[in-house]
Length: 249
Ligand SMILES: Nc1ncnc2c1ncn2[C@@H]1O[C@H](COP(=O)(O)OP(=O)(O)OP(=O)(O)O)[C@@H](O)[C@H]1O
Image 1 (cartoon, rainbow, N blue to C red):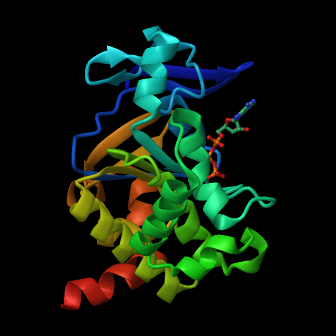
Image 2 (cartoon, rainbow, N blue to C red):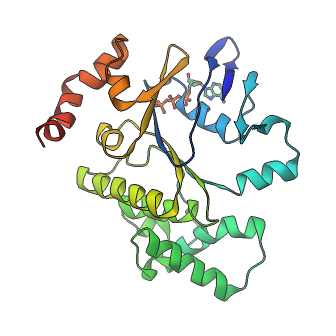
């Protein structure tokens, strides 16, 4: 992203945001509530048109792409949204198969096999195929949403608060799953997270949305940044609790 500006009426959310995402990395995006993380993600995905600036993928501005070009780019994205992870009236298998229908015609057998394969990749059994989202635990919903995000074999995975609402053990397992998939499938991952454990465990770099701009660095680099919000976030009591066991290892 280059010099992206997003405004809603008189409210300026992003005032010249620039951010690089490098192939194969896991980038965590943090920021206070209402700082504009979700709007940033929507802008990156081409779902929100910024007031100014560019969103480039492999050097090409997605705002200037034809519909066909944009569709081809979106075909390479996998996304899990914070809310509305799955369609409640569809089974898990139908949810996973949904992105396929947008791009391809496939036989019932192929769709069935694909749903089962994706479920296996996220550690869910084939039994989950026929279940409705309401019949799954919170952790299973997150995994099923991840399976859907992986449906089209993406190279880029966007996760909006992937571990929100999970207990610490399930969250840690989910972090390990993301890392396992990222390494195995050579994915580039961009995730919004409030979870310090997730940041420490999974992210190569951290982008902090602060004062309507982005500061991006390695976790160590960010932690050394003197900005008061960053200091409070990464060195406050909660942060110390997360980092203590790691430091002692
Ligand atoms: N469609 C919209 N119309 C008007 N204002 C909007 C719209 N979308 C977002 N905003 C405003 O932009 C600001 C940033 O919202 P955003 O949802 O990106 O924050 P966030 O950092 O993701 O917050 P949280 O961590 O609480 O989810 C908020 O003040 C929000 O009210």
